[in-house]
Length: 347
Image (cartoon, rainbow, N blue to C red; front, side, top):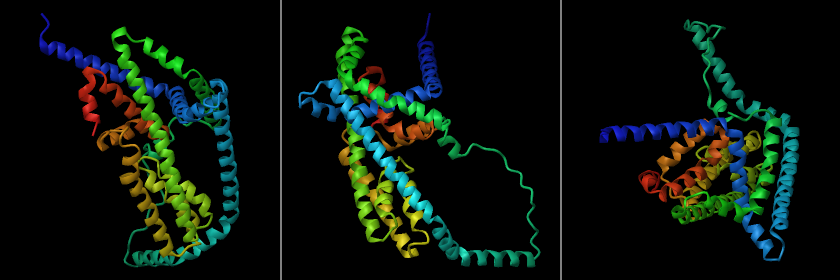
């Protein structure tokens, strides 16, 4: 006769097997799943625009098409503007590099003086052959699955088409998904899907508003500090600040890069403090106000999710980790046997 310990062992064995299968599916299905998730996020971002166009008595298919085309036109404009600014910056690189070399010259002389001192006291010369053990760096992890430029463009080209069909067949897809469940679970499934949709919409709109706010303030501050290309650098720094955990470092790169050789050291320090202050303000004030009511996930769960999805999907995993974890928590909240896991993920 089966004992309680045996049933518990079977339960945990099936749970671990299910988790292993999910991880394998996520790892080997990265290209398909990443495109699908980005299309879902895009469809929720464009859903308010589609609803607004429907109020003007436009058919939903036409409203969805107009929304997707408007977004593609906006992305094209941003890409062209970014490319033009990059060309202008590249033309000024020789001037910047010359000023940077002049700034670093005193440090180089100090380093040479220390090297000569070491030789004078009999310090052995370093060997020209260095054995380096090959390890997987974080840059390799973050670029995992990126593939060639052709693969990226091909995968990205599916996203607007998927988003269009998701917008067009949104009601049908939701109803059909609910019908996949047994009759006594359909109401729970309907409510769960609705909550996931609201969470994703709040996540996208909230991040967009936070990014625009931080970018606007960054442009104003960088303009006052006379940072070169402040209007472009401030916009880029503001949205890079949204990247989970790495945002505070990434947001510093553009203003420091264009500021070296152009700004005084004191002004560069002020720029760094501005970036750090804006990031902390967004993290402690804006995020709780705009996203706290929807994303009720504790910091430990967020950190583990970022580590896991970053290891599985690289940089794409870092972007999608929080909405995926939020959706998983909502599902766990509405499944009786999974509620303890939802409590662990929650605040």
